[in-house]
Length: 311
Image 1: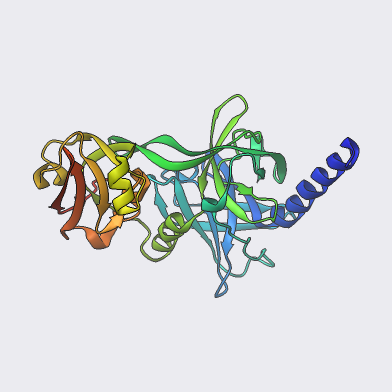
Image 2: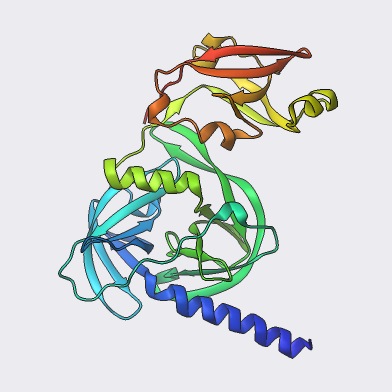
């Protein structure tokens, strides 16, 4: 394939994705601020949009403008600052609104894969930029209440993002929305919250309850390899090395220690912080969770009872 043919093929993919996804992306205005949002649910005469929690802020209502010029008011159904996601609802009676975009699974992305960002940077609705997945598993610092935390497993891309892109779609070459653009980290660097089973669970909870209750263990860790003999015996190559145990927290009360290598939580394998966070939702608050760690070459089981994460 010649360079010209390759460029034509690339252009066709980007233009096809843009044509597929753009109608589902709106420019949103709330008070003095704004950003973008993506239609992800259009059942029962109601349209729901997904955007960033930081785009919404403390506002409870606003207006959405779609690429065809259609405008509609919306209310904020719920926000989750810890994942930087928010759900908006447009009631019926606003004319023809677009159907849902197709959601993909960011867990299937690979570094170097083509992605297309669509949003309303600087107020220019329906703007399209393209690039690749630059890295996966990044962490994005956020603030929840008075506490600083991080959003895990953020997608890094070199697709150009500017103010106003936040809340817009990051789509793969098949036109599936795999991320919600969330921040401009620096020149030539953008980040997006992944759309995957964990964030879908968050979205479903926001739809029903308007907020996400999370459990808290009080442990900070980094991925760490298991010794060869343990990896061979368990079939698990890595765990989570504990680097900090919060004094007085559930993990400390359970006897977890700095240097422990966590293998399982709730009898489910753990290899990174996301592996624990996937389990720390409302249903485990106050429920003892079995935690298996490797300590000084020996397997140790403890039971930690998560408390509710304060806002």
